[in-house]
Length: 89
Image (cartoon, rainbow, N blue to C red):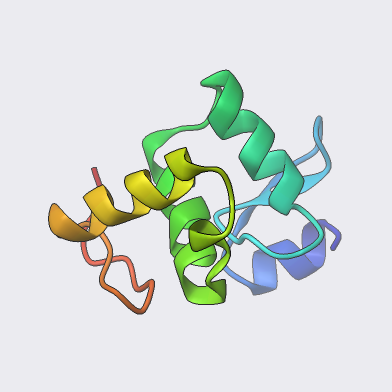
């Protein structure tokens, strides 16, 4: 994905990391996970990450932290069971 495609998807292009923020996909999933694990992700980016992981079912097959976090986000009403973001932090 490039800057123009990112804008069309409603994301914000990060030229330093060459990723589209606000739009998680196979091409930038590792970047989102790395930012989450290092504490560099914003609350909004974490919601986007977990929304994607819930939608694809991947949060239930990754290490336990991801499933527990996804469950908590669902229980707290930030994301629904289908992965739709309901409210922002």
